[in-house]
Length: 120
Image 1 (cartoon, helix red, strand yellow):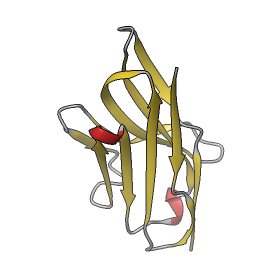
Image 2 (image 1 turned 180 degrees about the horizontal axis):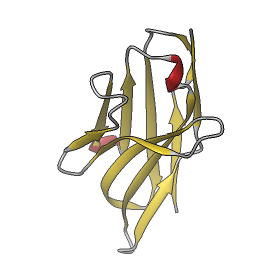
Image 3 (image 1 turned 60 degrees about the vertical axis):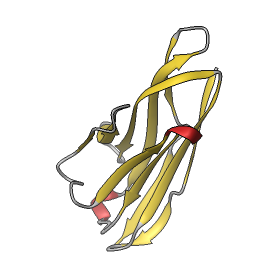
Image 4 (image 1 turned 135 degrees about the vertical axis):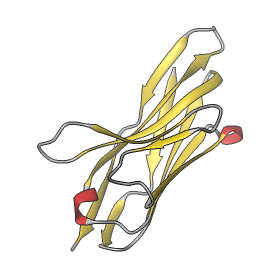
């Protein structure tokens, strides 16, 4: 079993910053892609940022230049640094990690979600 634990959400004023963390634990053999998604009230979940094992990154157009995704392979952790936050960034943020466990089976795990609220 692989478990993801997210932290770092909260309430911030527009223009402020937050840093989200997502740590994976369990019988992990390797981690491939890591990503952050968000779901605003009444909207579909959308990809915010992703990072591959080769450290290639991709971002939603709405967050380019403001958000930065990174990973620490030694800690099985991904981070999302969010700067210049806007009220429209308000959402529940979920991390997603894909990889394999020691039994050579693939996994695709989701975090529990963390609320980010940006006030105007």
